[in-house]
Image (tube, chains in turn cyan, red):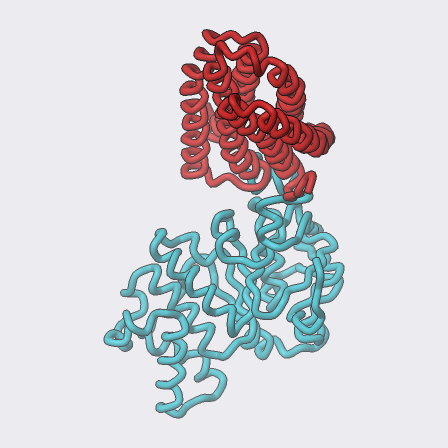
Length: 255
Length: 220
């Protein structure tokens, strides 16, 4: 794929990743472009979730992991002394299951900015409203800002988690199967939201839903047994994949 | 039966149906040409009557493709198979219409021996076109893109034959104004035979798309 260096957000080079002796990622190379949606697909256990977690060093929390190769974000090596708190602020993450904190809707969104030192009430109000609007949740939730977050629907909770990520003004949003626990209507709202968010953010999404990857992503990478088998524009991957394994996987012949 | 296996069998069935429709069209053209060259009106009428079966076959194929797309969300080769099946069925249906044109012309020219010399000139053009149809159907059944390209490349020859016959027919028309009606009929007929080559070219293009994922205009 042609690569315009000016649009490069994250560059992954020869990444190997181990859980103890088990090699979960093998020589992964990937260019993630700015303001684009990159989808990671592949069967369970192929390494795509491990991979997405290397991008903001979420795997640092696991004992016995090791990594070689490099990941640069805006040209800086994220494993070379980058401040992890700062990194996770810049590269936020949304998980498979909505995981709001057991506090009010408002406090969920304000939590991140508060930990980064923002105490001014008016400023927090502004951040909460902007983040909830950006996550397409404000109109539904503005009357219930001080109600418990755990009391809203699953689809709303997931959008709240997206708002929580947006509140700390990230640059990249990582999503690990963000709609797999949601019904089709909530899924569709999240997909619309992703499509809007890519104007301002760079998005990387792991999905098991082939049609979702087809609908929302600009580029798609197929992982298999820890390696990237094929990367291409989403149109190319879904209409004319070059690799037989990719073809077999996306057409449901295995996986 | 596992769901995915059922899906792949449906795709295989679709392929068989396309080949079957192709064979029906090939037979219709063969019969229509025989009727035209041997002045067999009854055979021509049978071609006209049987065209409805080919129309039904097209609908059946389109319905099957629509149903598979709606329920299975096919991608890659499977998707290309379905899209090209719809396009190929549509081209085949139009080719069958040209068999009907040939048959109808045969019935209209009954009892007019004065144009037999023209009839003899047109038969080789029809044979040329039908040979292309057969070649395309072989390429279709064998997933053979080389054959598809070769067949499409013959279309220029058919266009040249058309141009040559056009001049001959117009000359005949000027010299025999009392047969203006019949020669006009034959002028339309050679135009339809020329179109037959265009449909063959389209089918060859769909074969190449199906096999390679790339649309290539053959024989520009």
